[in-house]
Length: 415
Ligand SMILES: Cc1ncc(COP(=O)(O)O)c(C=O)c1O
Image 1: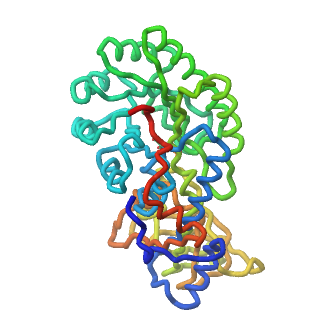
Image 2: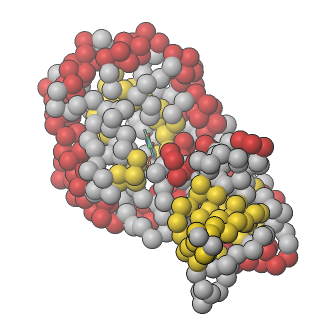
Image 3: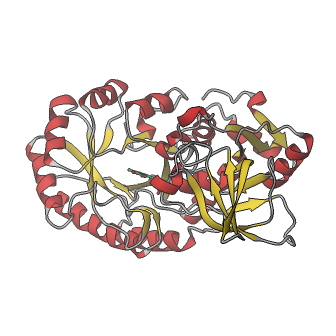
């Protein structure tokens, strides 16, 4: 692993209070009318401890797409997690941090040929697949790959359902695809699923694990010995959420249906690790009062980040963001709307919220902004992307500077 440069970090002795940091910076005038993220690396390290405590048997392979910040990758690599990569670019990025190919799952069921060839070149052999076309493509370009069949098992409610696009029907196509893989002489090693990102239906994991068991049994009949179950993502990560209920359902079903330690169980958590670690400080740069028949209706605040920047999560991640301010809780509240900085009327951050009276240069703060925000943001209309300041507690410095990962998180035993 590369050591983390100490000057990338503010090392602190107490747990971070991001809003207080923003308050201090607002007083000292350090924030210069550009949006700013305060990232709490210790929060990510604490999430890893929570994960290991809640689901000790399930090895996390962090979904890089969720937030591909080099410091996040480096932190998780130092902690020894594995990684879920969606493309050649993500594989290259993760491997540049010294992550071994055996700690990577190429978890995109549809892979461009050149990306597949790159995976072969880099020895990233474990990958998901959900169609006959993909099996034939893999046969042609990476015949020694280790395949994981992605099945569809949708949560009844999820922030971002994924089943429409990925995952074969476990009851019909699943068996056919396992048979086809066998007849092509391919090596299939297990089953994966993703119940939907931001899953609000924990029972979906039970159904999916049960469906996986049936396919493990079918595969055995036709001569495969599956050794990998990948339970995907979907775990919530905001500060007021908990993975307790999902964990208890997963643990119960895994213990019941996959008691053998010969089956490695992994997951691909994204938002769980990073959402609560990032707090975004925006500043009001313009303001307009709306009147109806001469009477006050609401206030429009224009801030320095919008839906083309961090708040792309409103559109793509179906997130509802919650603004707070540095004003006292006693102040009178007014009907308000918050708008991004670009000239597009679509660029609205909050449609109808109650806020105290704010002036130009005042701050509006958004917590839980670490997932599906930064990698998607663009500088449309010439507005810069937010700067990021990283904070870590002194007691965690060793964790993030581990020079060798534990190699606990390898996908294929004996490889
Ligand atoms: C294949 C795959 N794995 C994992 C994830 C991460 O999901 P989450 O952030 O819900 O944990 C995603 C998200 O889209 C995904 O597509």
